[in-house]
Length: 320
Image (cartoon, rainbow, N blue to C red; front, top):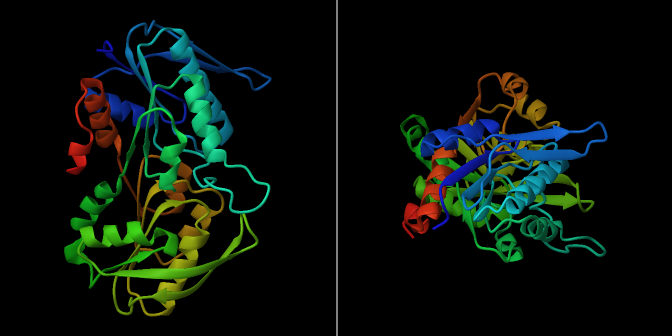
């Protein structure tokens, strides 16, 4: 219907895009991304995509604004070259936490990002584990919001025999529903960290207490992303204070803004389990001294691309 599959990678997701291309048995299409001395970006395709089904793979973490602008320019370039269909594949979507007006005189930036992606030329979008589900409603174009938690669950299933009476701990009450589902999939009980924020956006977080039992148990602390790791640090310290044994930390998006890695490196964590939705530098991996386990989302995204191209159900992947 749309011609052949053409895969393009932004500069932020080259490694992941290569894995997706390998899964699909398709080459990465070549493009030039040039940054001029005035920081303006220039994108040039090396071959025509007229009439093709095109997928642009670009995560939007640090440097956020460069990576986001690069994605938008690539989408527009493909649209202007008469691609039949353009899909933005965004493993991690920036500004996903700015999803509502929770205080006076502020923007809803997640809506703005959705609008920009549409205006730039995307016909569809694919993303992973949005911080807030209502962001799907900000798009007028169809899309697939995937979850990578089943990848993390499968890995934990392989470790369950070595864990002592494990319990899942949701890093905050806002993650309670997803945390409960995660615990159910590994057949473990659930506990919650009650915390308080002070000072609005960028606020300090204080973990107050644990709701549930973690004493003399191995703890699996789970969240959708780790940014500065302040919440995770508070949670780890709290569960250890009340008698937890080994602590494992699980997330989909290892954003690791400063000083996340420095905080995590100092904590009594047995293992940090995440995906490659966000690239983690060798320097950051070295600071964590072999405790970081990265699981790839490439097969998941690759299969979704294949099914979207062939017009088959994506929900079947999740037994929906």
